[in-house]
Length: 221
Image 1: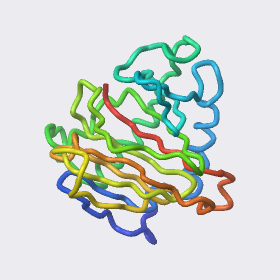
Image 2: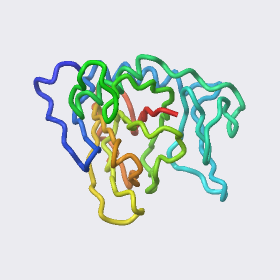
Image 3: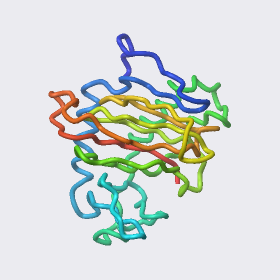
Image 4: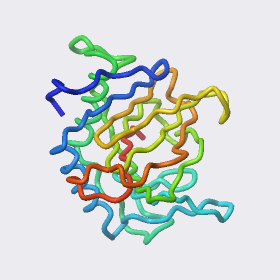
């Protein structure tokens, strides 16, 4: 991920929202996928999220550091097997802070504020999308912190729809997130609605050995 020689530059999608194509090189993608496969195993492993109205999310999920359930967080898989949540790894927080540096530019030494690169990220949500999985337009509003959200994509390409803070409708921008891409939204974009209307089956890099798509979103509780 440190060799940007052949990578496309970051693309500003909206104020505070930045797409970083090819941020993770193939080796980093394999490392992250191997970790995701470990995290998906029980206890407190990958599960289907059931909404209060009785519906189910089509993307399956596992939490690190904190367990998300509609619409809150806990330290145990309260809507799963009840086990303690798996710990959030420090290295994943470092990866997220590296994305902030690349997306927003380096902050002066000791500076804090709009780009606080010493953010103590403490949770991640790992979502697995099969061919039929989607994610409706929603806001990440269950965190107490307004720290930027950082996501990493693995596997199949998806259409990531990034909207606005005013509602689920237009205007929005559709961005193709490919395996290895990162995306960050903070500042004025932190509360924007976003979703995944579709994935493109069979587009994952063959060498990765993944059918479907995995997203890892890193946040501060």
